[in-house]
Structure formats: structure tokens, C-alpha cells
Length: 224
Image 1 (cartoon, rainbow, N blue to C red):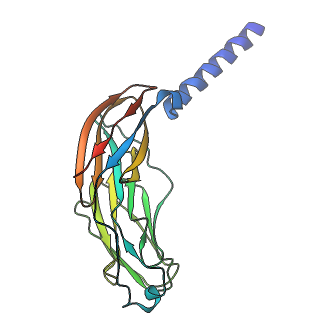
Image 2: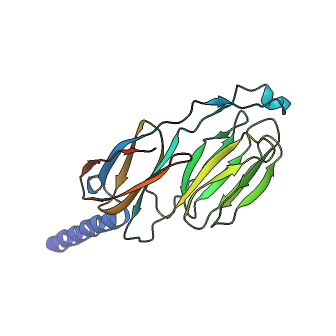
Image 3: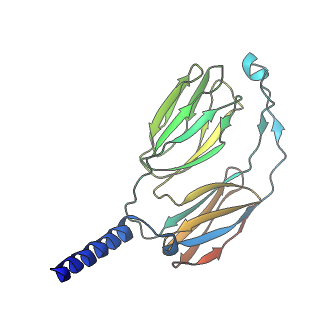
């Protein structure tokens, strides 16, 4: 009887380990990719917000183009779970916050208005169904789901012409938003990837990279 209990315990423990390996990626099984994206852009300029009395009372809006999207697209694509958490694109101080977002196809986007004035959100997607919705009052929200992968595209406010942001939609979760001349980091399962860096004015660069479990790799880009 004791041997039977021992055998059952071993089987249950082995099964638990197998399920963990299938459903969860241990950090020791991942590779680390880090680097910088360098480039030169014009200095920030101030937006003229005088047309809206509320916006005119807010902190000066600096129009900057510092954001970069870094992504690692698996060469061998397999279905990956979609994050349950929504990505929020807010309107704070008469500007989009953040200026650039990246999300996975099928993940919910929440466009929100935290300002005390009316706004509009007009997504200029080419592959996915876009939207053009009013956010008429503080606390207004609009939820949307992009179903397909799509290169970064603009979202603008048709009421306040200085307000714009960018949205990148990916078929995988291996992406991050960083800044020009700053460091980025991604955790990747073993495999071969197309590493892409994108900036709204300086364009895109790509490079193939293969990683193994436990690798610590560095890859930097210079955009011109």
C-alpha cells in the first residue's frame, strides 16, 4: 500500500511539472534581449492650444517624437494567448497619453477622455476597421478591438489638430515602447525572430536574430 501511495505521489508531481512547462514559461527558459535605438530628431515645439479655452489653461503641450516601438516577430508563428488587460490611451492635458502604444491583435483598447473638454478619437488604420468617435465629456470612454496585425498608424483628434498618437498592432506579445537614445529590453522564448524598431519620422529597421534559453543578447540600432 505504501509503495502505491509513493507511486501516485510521483505521478501527480510529474504531471504538475509537465502542465507548468506547457502553460507557463519559466524565466530560466527565456532569453534576454536588450539594446538602444539611437537617432536625431528636431527639438520639441509648443502647440498652439488657444482655440480651446480649457486646453489654453493646461500646461504647455510639447509636440515630441521620442517614442520607438521595438518588436520581435517569431519566424515560426503559433497561436499565442491574448492578454486580458486592456491598453488605455487617455487624453490628459489636451494630449494623447501615452503618445505611442503597442498591443496584441484581439486585445482591448480603451480610449478615454480625462479632460474637462470635448475630444474626438479618429483611428486611421488601413487593415483593421478604424473608428471616428466623439469623447464629449470628462470620463467618456470608447472600447475597440483590432483583430489583425498592422504596422503603426496614427490616431488623431479632429477637433484639436495638434493631438495625435500612434498605435501598433502585433500578432504576438513580444513588443515594447521605448525612447530614442534610451535602453529597451525584451524577454523571448527560444527561437528565431525578426527584430524591428519603428519611429514615426525616422522609419523602420529590421534584423534577424536567433536566441536560446538563458541567452543574454544585445542588439542596437541607429535610425537616420
